[in-house]
Image 1 (cartoon, rainbow, N blue to C red):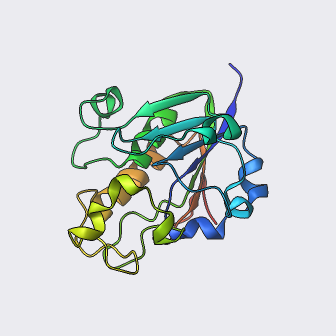
Image 2: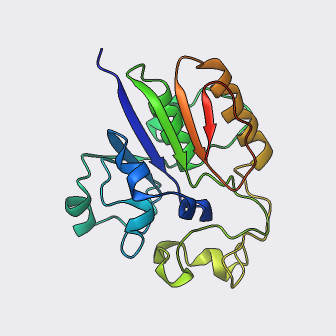
Length: 196
């Protein structure tokens, strides 16, 4: 078995703590929820091998070819990723489903979670500007889920505390893997977890 490394790119503001050099140090890159690349390359690089997104997201068009997307995954309810998620107590986000997918593959021994800010209430949700957001989810502003500054105004169904507990339990369970975390949420370093 040949070992691989993967950087999983979320959309939280902590993405801006990342560098292209860090992402480029990984063999592969997975993106979650169609993050914005144009203008943010110094943080997110210019490649994405895997695209994880809910079926309601506006699909990448020319971006797929430019980024090098090899495979896309549906993370919506009823999808195979949702059905294969075998951890009770949380409604997994697209990022958590991507993490779980690679976690279960033994060849992925080095996994980075970038921009996994865990849907904190009254915190800005994304590293990019509101006007760059996917128009398919304009309703999040219209119904008051996000305020004019892009902050989450409600408690998310992707529970912050339970998601944090899930991640820590996986770090503990998969001690043979090395994890890197870039997040605005507090994670503790462990022998196999580096917090950046």
